View 1: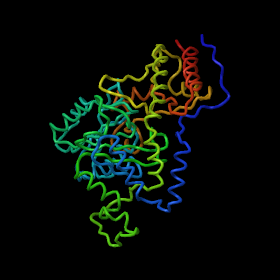
View 2: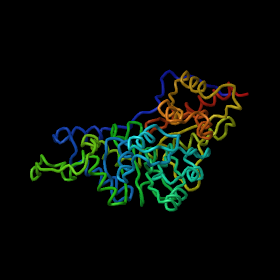
View 3: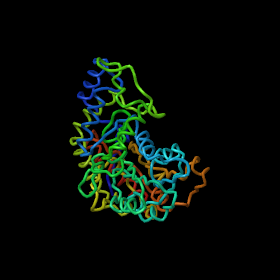
Length: 391
């Protein structure tokens, strides 16, 4: 039996890793008086694309905006269908609805939590225009199979890479060499943060050009500097667009975070390795499975319990962790079970693998400023709960 001693301080589920370098860059941006979209945003786009090995990067104010615009570049709208996974945040599906199209869910591969390509193919109809695979938690979808389906049926692939910065498929960074597009999130909890924000990445000139117009109110793409020396007050609205652009205060934070990404990732890998080592020894737990084709960026550490070996369920397990001063979350409540989507005809039971996964998952703290002591404490807390409630 473990000799567990409860700590006095609460371990938050997540904390952004902000240093004086980020603070100084943001202050310098404020002092420059250029705080809206400007030179830092353009520099962030350039450096982000170079990091991934992508041809184009379009900075936006959220991953939601990037997902929406990616579909709009293909004129996806009423009468069209777009296939995605129910195991994701609601924005993945809501952006399909915002285009006027219908989201079609395909169940997950239970081993990885990612969309199952075999289930995707079953959902393809003559109305299907695109597929939005989600690199869940930093785990990587089986992209060869997904792109083979896209080629076979003439589909656009818009990868939801909100969790997948630094993740790799067969050694290649997600976002590199895209035939479609990938969307990233820089929300406060992400591996790289700008407070909120996102990036649309593509190798296609047509997608990038249309996206740049759509994210800036539909203005001709050179209009950002119309107030600067040499800029022109005259601009054109090429098509009705959206107020989706990133601004320099966000980009300033992002530039420093990008320069520190390898350092921050190294710490995530150390923590994830300890979790994997210890939780794999406990029969009532299923630590994340990483297939051979994937390099996991460990945005989330999603631990599954095996309720058949415990006298408590997942919800009570979370309560027990909270009582031991460990913060947690759950990623995600399957989208098709939400009220808005049940109104559209889906119901619990429609996607059994996603629902089985949901009923067992707990997201544990995993971020660069998590100390070795905190990491070992989380392991001890989980072990203590399993021992107390093991059948």
